[in-house]
Image (cartoon, rainbow, N blue to C red; front, side, top):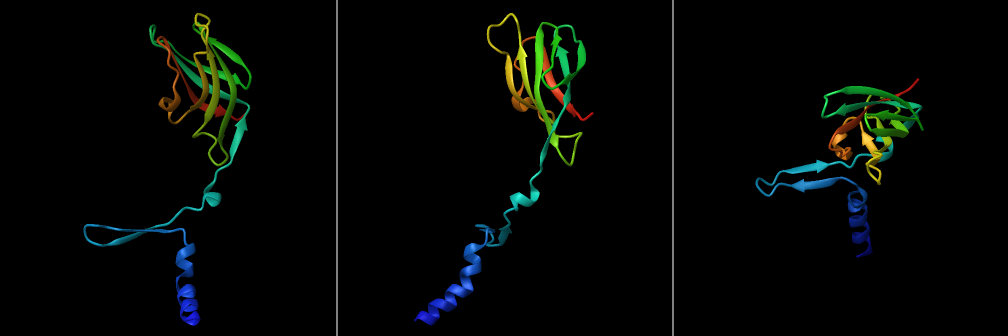
Length: 143
């Protein structure tokens, strides 16, 4: 009995430790194996940039302006003040997928209008909610 258990354990042990998932179709009974990606192998290192390029839009006048900010710098756009806290980008793609920590103040309001990370490739993911102004990240500046 012990030898039978040992044979079964040896035969099925690799399946117990595999991280792949087998999915069987309820329609035709076909199977598909989904492999779990190796997260460590596909991880990307983020690099801090010394500054960022932001774009601002005044929704009333239609004015569009690009703001070149260094980390810690504040720029005025209309009546709002935009402060760049940090800008990061993937090590293997300096021109894409930038994300920046922004603090946006409106002197007419008591609380901060926006404070958080804004992603260049998905500005609507965490957007500024202001009746008159819109600000989004274009890219991190590397020099």
